[in-house]
Image: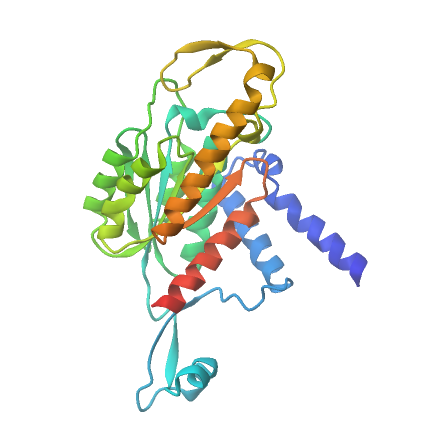
Length: 308
């Protein structure tokens, strides 16, 4: 049995490994393969208790099906509550994807933009399978593309993600695009922000406040290449800023330790400010299988359902 389970795991990994995904041209096929592998793996994992479609509780009313009573909650509260599912309570889900030039970096893993695109497609496909309405916003220093959330917009979202082209000179900024996003997303829902977060942590928190002010449940996916954390370069080279085009000669062995300390502090501060503001945050590198991010998303969704 162990040998069979191991073989099955490797078969699922074949669909989730980012380098394998890069060979799949069809974004719908890619997202369907990843989500199918993730769901099948989840059913065989210790995390079977995570519900794929649970939404929220409501008070029991006479005539309700007693099979939907949450008996664990009854044991804690001595009150009857009914489990509602996504078929009963559909909600809005929107991916907000950073397409600025810094997302074009490619190192040890995929290009960050491609990883973000694949993640956005998988999240959108997964959520639509749960019968929620899906939408998409892409941005650099402004909103570039907007697909309003709808039960019929999965293909439009995937098409918009598929046609994104990286380019130099696209400077990124969170504040203005997220303010415009909050203006457009007036109905409360869940928002997945996918970005590399190259801004001061306090500026990031200020930028997401309009979305929180609208009542949205926000989850931030921080995408980095392993090179950006480890700075493994050896030879003296000219390093180019992908957004401004400015070039700086750098001797990596001399600066490596200082760079790692600065980056480490930045990452710690980001995690701290998100935690203090009760915003779900997860960091992923571009060589990491996508099921890591999907599991973080599903866990966040379960936590939000319990809070409600």
